[in-house]
Length: 92
Image (cartoon, rainbow, N blue to C red):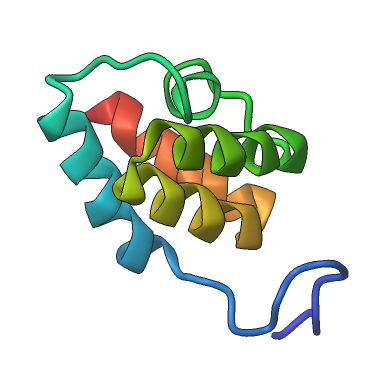
């Protein structure tokens, strides 16, 4: 049963299976730990919009295209989707 559109989220938002491989790629590239953009979200579990919005700008300042792609995708996702990605990362 569909609950309809989610306010403030695009109807064509990214899916967990589309974004999770990018997150895995980031963790592999950084050997499991990193600072800067996305640290608070993916390592500490701060999954609210405000954190991802800030990380987009920080990732651009760092010149890190992978982090920009992840932050933009996760900002467009629901909190439930973000929790799934965070949980999958922690379980790995």
